[in-house]
Length: 97
Image (tube, rainbow, N blue to C red):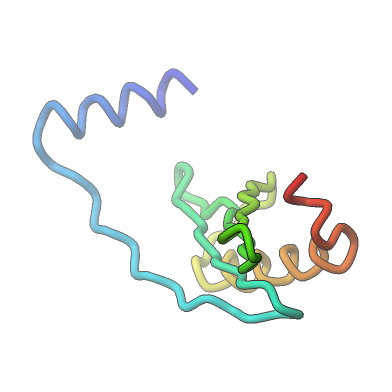
């Protein structure tokens, strides 16, 4: 954790930043939008993303991060979508509460 914060501080202080990751298109599934957002953690991509749903009260969002890591960003994106579908199937709207 400390090393991550130190690296962030170093980038901010030096004025350089890593290349911005390419946006990933949202995936529609059973009335939900899955937005994969894996990020580079060391040399591996961490599984992360969000699940959104439009409701009369507005957009509800559930963000998640999993311990699974992948060498390939594409593999991390694919697993993020799979994990999000699993969350939707198991929890549905309860994930927002």
